[in-house]
Image 1 (cartoon, helix red, strand yellow):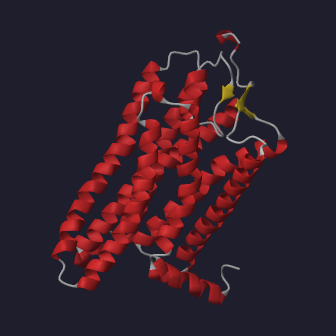
Image 2 (spheres, rainbow, N blue to C red):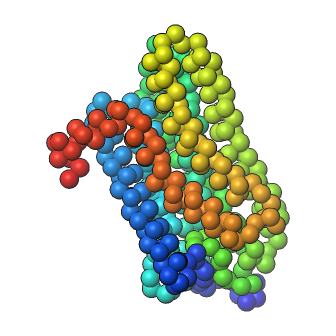
Image 3 (cartoon, rainbow, N blue to C red):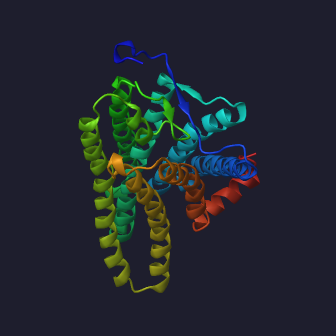
Amino acid sequence: MESGNQTFYFEFMLLGIFNHSPTHIFLFSLVLGIFTVAFMENTTMVLIIYLNTHLHTPMYFFLSQLSLMDLMLICTTVPKMAFNYLSGRKSISRVGCGTQTFFYVSLLGAECFLLAVMAYDRYVAICHPLRYSILLNQKLGMRLAVASWILGSLDGIFVLASVLSFSYCSSLEIHHFFCDLTALLPLSCTDTSTFERLLFICCVVMLILPVSVIIISYSHVLRAVIRMGSGESRRKAFTTCSSHLSVVGLYYGAAMFIYMRPATNHTPNQDKMVSAFYSILTPMLNPLIYSLRNKEVSRGLQKSLRKGKLI
């Protein structure tokens, strides 16, 4: 395909992650099961927090936004993968691929900033409990959440504009189960070196900057927890913070592995496995990490079930 004939009408081929062997059929069924559980968990978390007024605080509002992002993330990749696998079709249009890339990158970026906001929330709650309602009220919490969505979307727009502007004159087979940026770059016959440098800078901003906020916040939290006289207060603080740190470790570890390595160091199988972990498994684990270790969320669920609001 010559670069002068590039249009929006050609289609990519998603090679996927599974074949039709018995082992892969089982793994595909397992992924569908994880997707179903993640979909139900995150939907339930959003509804619980929305329906229970005692959970209308910045902490739980941020948690509902995290669940909403996870819900949208799994719906961006898994349904298309499942449709292609079950129908035998592997094609995705250039516009469809760009749209999938935009939502995927935007949601990843938004979660990066939201996790940093959640770390700041824990810092204020533990280090300045008497001034919490002043330093982080509902209005400021709303603005911080909106800012996370906007910053993530800006990154998605940058990536989308680049993906749609590239010429693709080699094989159009994407060695992935969705249109991931790292799988698209090798297919382009355009020089992507400048874009890759800009992408690395974006990754530094989207990953390193929020991680720095998290580290600084929790260094203050750790000092405050150590000075606590009450063992019960110390246990409660550790429980709350360890839930958030577990999510941070799962999310940032995988994201840095994928997007902060040079393109020459990427292998399709590695990228597919790691991407499947943080785009499918992590959204299932996040609500479990928070809900199982949070009595307020559990009470909110029981209250909603008694009133029949979730049925």
